[in-house]
Length: 121
Image (cartoon, rainbow, N blue to C red; front, side, top):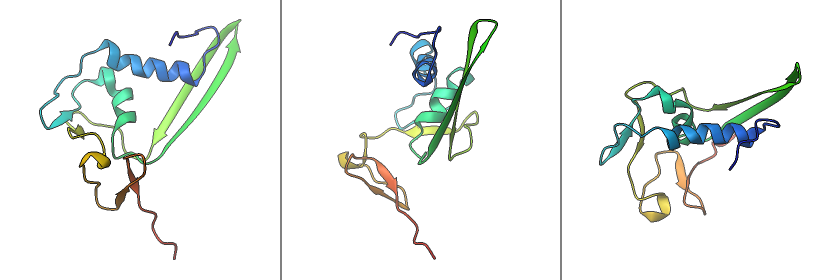
């Protein structure tokens, strides 16, 4: 996707986060897990972790002196990665391919682990 800096939007922001992984090689990719070691790919890695179950994003565009100023911010339901954290464990690619979901999750029809809703009191 071409980045449109004249009229930025959420896709522009997502593309810039994706470019982190396209432009910088991942470090510490082992045979069984990927470990967070390089802050240059922090935004991307924080969004792709398998234990994230919720994400919310906000965006704003302001025009100042004829220039578009754009910001996008996304929050997830997990704390940001710290150096040395495991980003994900290497597997077969989803619960439909033999992977097991963590406790409190079940495999959905798309092959993703989905949180089991807690009963309301």
